[in-house]
Length: 293
Image 1 (spheres, rainbow, N blue to C red):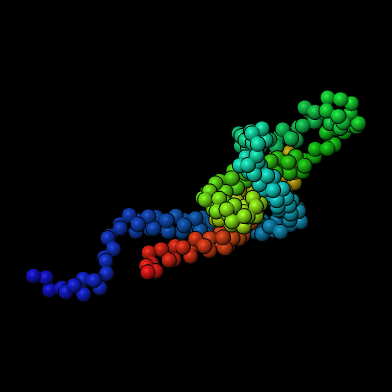
Image 2 (cartoon, rainbow, N blue to C red):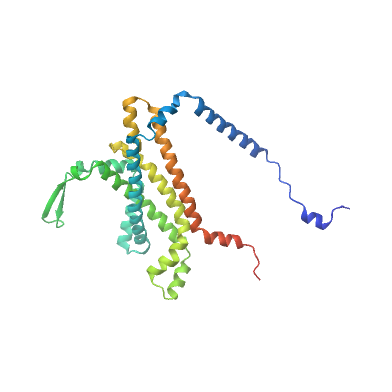
């Protein structure tokens, strides 16, 4: 017979099974990390002195300022437009709903770089834009060559791209909320807008915020594409410098480090916003399995 009592068995801790794969993967990861640190410190071709020299140079800071402006402006305008598109797709009449679907389909189908080049070369397709009665007389014309600069083409392109993807993020978040929530609010006499603002949107935010944070970080990195049309953003600023002094790797490291810093800051902010909107979810998870009777 066993010498262990029931109390001993209940108090006994479960022994973790051996996991040699976990130890092996950890050892390989530490080895690779040590190799990375070693090459960063010992390879003189990185030229960290040159990196430090240009890291906060005036031209780099001007390019960084334009990158931040493009990211903030396109996210604000694009997300506002995306909310409208999502609303039309969910509650619009058939023709506007089809138009909104077509907009999302087209923008998501065409690469951002192709859109950027199209808007930048719009003057080749429409040399002049006229204002007047449709299919009737025009009251004035303007040259598109002077209208669409590189900065404006970048702003329009990134705004439309953010609008298309954010509309799907918002639409998916709203659809994740149980329909019974809206029906219950309407039964209590709440209007559609108040129901959306006070009932649906707060419950949709935990699903909207993570994807929106990823979209923000993706937009920040997508601003580097504007260097193709000679808009002096962060990447193009370092390109201008290394085209003059031929220090390609150190200047690319300057841009890389700035992008890493910015994405890290945005990721930290995203973490706290996600935690704020998931308070109710954490509360539910904390009381799961607790017998309240």
